[in-house]
Amino acid sequence: MNPLPTILLLSLYELGHQPHGLASPRAHLAQAGLPAHAVDLSVEPFPTEIAARADFVGISVPMHTALRLGVSAARRIRALNPRAKICFYGLYAALNEPYLRETGLADHILAGEYEASLLEWLQPAFTSHESRITHHALHPHPSYLLPLRASLPALSSYAHLLCDDTAYVAGYTETTRGCLHTCTHCPVVPVYGGRFFAIPVETVLADIRQQVEMGAEHITFGDPDFLNGPTHALRIARALHAEFPGLTFDFTTKVEHILQHRALFPEFRALGALFVISAFESLSTETLIRLRKGHTPAELDTALNILHAADLPVQPTFVAFTPWTTLDDYLKMLNWVRTRGVVNYVPVVQYAIRLLIPPKSELLTDPDTARWLGPLDPENFSYTWAHPDPRMDTLYQEISALAERMAEQFADTDPCTAFEAIERVAYALAGQAAPPRLGRAHLLPPPPRLTEDWFC
Ligand code: SF4
Image 1 (cartoon, rainbow, N blue to C red):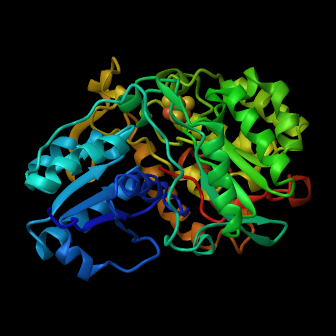
Image 2: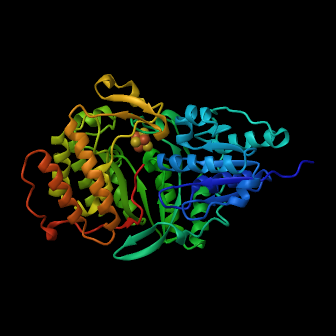
Image 3: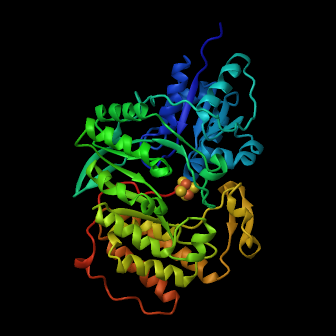
């Protein structure tokens, strides 16, 4: 019998939580009798000794930042150990398959419900040591196992919940995979094509339970959208609260779902929901239509009112810079944040988010790409684009530099200071006087939040 192969799974970055991209495939490998070393390079050193003797290396790339870092890790592994077979898995692996294949960094690419496919790839390759390059489609009936978290870095190594100036240990789990919607800018869409899968309630509960035993005092439900299956979500939240009445949670859901399922929010709050993340995206009707968001600028107010009524703060996310967002739209966004009193709700990075167009993006089919789309920049895993109004690209440069400086201080300084600085830059570019200083007393207080802000 062949000896067991040495398998190394690497995670680079998962928004500051313990990587699901390690815990989930490890469970499937362990069930098949294939132990794997799992290393999270966001909090652990590069495992040189294991990488040098690994037969197979899986690199988890669920987001753009992870792929950038994952490519560097793959180069390092190739230099150390040319015979290792490397598989990139996760959303951004599928989107960037040609680059990863042509540069010789990947022997294999998987995305979507990748766990079973990873196993399928490893089992014959383990015997023959032959690699194949295959892009697997979604498994029609994916199976979900309890994520294997033992020996991963402690939850206390990751982003904490910050609530009333106190830090709490946070865990992370998912109740669904994929998404029912088809927003044009979303990396989930080319992989899942408007489909989503529910993870069994018992599996989600068992994962919450094991993280509570590891010290979790709060759970982030990291589904692309928690309310794709509202009955499923409610069942899980009720079960969580029944078993752990003191445990709090947060989740992500779209504006359209906040409006559709408005009746559920008071109950989510009573069950322990502390805050919600929602893709508000833009105050520009044109941009919301192009991104196929399913909501209007006016509905941002409705969503905010629904959440206020349920005593649930929202962390809105924005795609502040797109080819259709004018300078006037940008000022409208700032004005909306100011007049709704939610300056403390919006992480400063959100004012500097620029539309990312990965290969295979739905946006490539937009009817007027000739006005703004540039060539693919494969090393940055996205298409270049320029705004038809060059002032918007200047504004982006200035705001992103400013936001970067301010973000480092966000936890410790008054977010109003960052917001006012952003206002000054934007209004100056528009040739207008910036609004007066914010009346701090009229703003909603800083809501509970995670110490790592959401971005792509
Ligand atoms: S609702 Fe969210 S996760 Fe779903 S397609 Fe739109 S942006 Fe993506």
